[in-house]
Length: 527
Image (cartoon, rainbow, N blue to C red):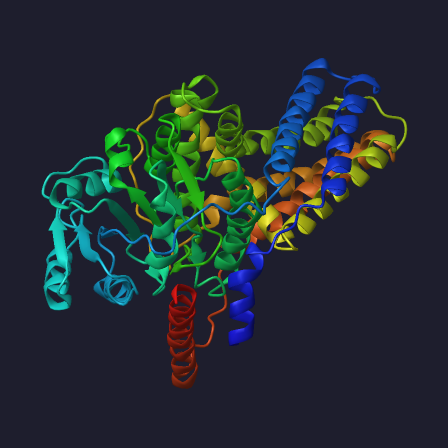
C-alpha cells in the first residue's frame, strides 16, 4: 500500500456527515415498515410471528438510536493548548514480545510534551509468561520505570490499579503494549483537561496492520464506523466510550470510582459508565494519535469479540444504565444502544431459523400470496444501507456487515455466559497470527448453508414455486451471502510475499516523516 492510500485510510473514516433529511426519511421508513409488518400482514404461526416482530423491534431500536447518535457529528469539545500538567504514561503488557513493547516505549519517549514519566506495567510475572524479566531489563535499558505486579487479580484492570500508588501525576495516559503513540499524542489530548470535570479523553484505535490479511481488513472496517460517526456523535452527548487504550484519564476522577473496574471482563467500558454516573464529562478526539495491531487470525478475533460482548452484557444485566443514578437520558440511551449491539447475535439466529422452519415444516411467520413483503422490505433495507454509507462517507462495507452478523455464535455464547453468571478469563489478544484449524468456529455457518440449500429443494418438492418459497428462499440466500465474509476468514490463506527491504525502509520513512510533520504542526499551532 502506498503512502497516499495509507494516509487516506487513516483519516477518511473520520470525515463524516449528517444529512438530516435522509436521516429523518430513514427513521420514518423504519417505523412505517414495522407498523405495516405488525398490523397489515396476516400472521401465520403465532410463535414464529412473535419472534419475527421481536427481531424487527430490535432492528428498529438499532436504527433509531444510530440516527439519534449521528444526527450531529460536528461537536468539538473546548480546550486550552497552553494547559500542560504532568502525565504518568502507563504501557500495559502481559507477555507481549520485547520488540513490540520496545517500539511503543520508544515512541512514548519521543512524545513532544514537557512533563511526563513512562511506566511499563509488567503483568508477565503473574500471567506466567517467560519473558517477564526481559521486560524489566528492557525498561532499565530504555531508562523508564517498570512496575512488575507480584499478586494476581483483576487482569489488565488489576495491573493498572496496582500501579496507582506508585505514580502521582494528575493525569494518566494508558497504552496497550502494541499501540504506538504519535509524537503529538499528549499535546493533543491533555488540553481538554483544562475543564476539571473531564474524566477521560479517548482517541481512535487505528489498526496499522489492517491490510495484513482479509481478517484484519474486515476487522478494521468494523471499527471505522464505530470510531468514525458513532464516537463523534457520542461526543456531542457526553457519552464517549472508554476503550482501554490510547486514552488519558484524570487521576482525581479515576480515584472517585476506585480505579479501573475489576468486576467485569470489559473493565474499560464499565469504568467509563461509572465515571459518567459520577457526573464527570468525557471527550472524544477524532484524530488517529496512536496505532495498534488488529487480531490476525480468527481465534484471536473470536476471543476479542467474546470479551467485548461479555462485558457489554455485564453493562445490561449487572449495571443497567436505564436505572443507574447520575446518568442523563442521553447517556442511558447511548450505553444501552452500545451494549445491546451484541444482542444482534440472538436476532441473527432467529432470522436465520425462520426460513428453515418454512422449508421443512411449511410453517410461516406471515401468510403471503405475493411478493408484497419483499417490495416493502427491500427499499427500506437498501435505504438504511445507503444512509449508513453516506454518514460514514462509505466506510461501511458489506465485509464489515458480514463480520458483525457472522459473529452471532460468539455473541450468543457471551449472552448465555452472562445470564448464567459464568466466569470468563481475560485473554490478551495475540499480537501475532496463530496457526491452526479454525473451521470449528464456522461450523454453524457451514451447517446452515447446507441445511438451507437442501431445505429449498424440500420446499420446492412439497409445493412448487410459491410466494412463500420465493420470499423465504431469498431470505436464506441473503443470510448465506452475509455469512460468506466470516466463513472466508477461517479458510487457509495464501501466503503473501514478505515486504522487501526497500518497502520496509519506505514505510519507516513515512512514519518518521509523519511524526516530524505532526511535530511541526504542533509547534506552529502553539506559536
